[in-house]
Image (cartoon, rainbow, N blue to C red):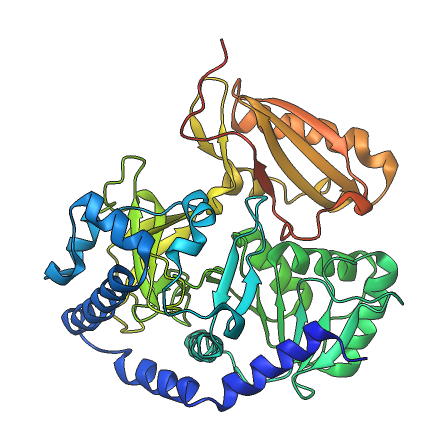
Length: 458
């Protein structure tokens, strides 16, 4: 019997690559990528206004909330007018999905999907096949920006690939892609994965940063040679830190790239061959960075939450959607010549913002992770950080060897005492591989405390 997930993926791939929507989108992106800033903004404004007018006329939820806010998209005359429109939270989307959907949408003819559930509550999504064709075009264009061949053989080490027989791999996309399960990366399976990759001879590896680190760590510990012919590793969906880039490059001997996107398809930002800044693709959606009070971030180096309005998926629009992810604003321009909005880096993705004892919000991701590249870190197979209470952090650790837990515990306690003195009580727990959540995307940090509403301990 054919696996339904495999069949759906194959249908989407065939349609995406052969659809007129795919080819039309690619041509549009390539013909507009070096437009002037003013011309890009005019083009973006037309897309933005069209989507807001559509939402106003076809979605009961948006018509109602726009009227309550006293705004009408027909009256928009410039991009900045979007700031008067109401924000949309994940909870509001979840609670009002039926009202948000366009009245023209026919559920039986739509494809239902879910986000990866990084907040612990996955979001249901409805899409047309054309949305997948458009998405495929943007991904291929983004690969070209990074100097990556989008049509090369790829090993895709992400998500679940399995059956009742315990087979965690298959070759799909007409032989173009080797799929390996990132949820079953035991030493025994990694030994098999390495043989499969070596026999398959991919030029590109697609994996989460944490997954790429697990593979690279296994290769180094076991003195395994890198893969001949592997030229690129693309590591999205988590913050990719400089120490990880250097380590993966050293072990796998390939170029390492990343990009920012999410399952909601509301915003997409890519690096290019000329810099490590993120280029926000202007025809994918309209992105803003806002502070806690909803004000637009305009100062150099300012940290803001990413708020996105999608230009696709009219059956279920995302208008001023609060992603829960954060980026650092910059007015710098890239030497590549594209006049896109730029972000210096993605910070925390909303999941690495911890609440200290005094109630302060601290982004612990980069500060912590850039300190743990030492001998003790290599004894950790995987770890997660959870905040269950203000001023307290719990590390859940899978060690390579049980006897290393004492050293690991002392290490984390020391790191936090040095980095954030007096800010947190640190606990370290041993985690079994069988306890891992299959849909958590290998997150470093899981937040159970409401960041904005958190108050200091008495």
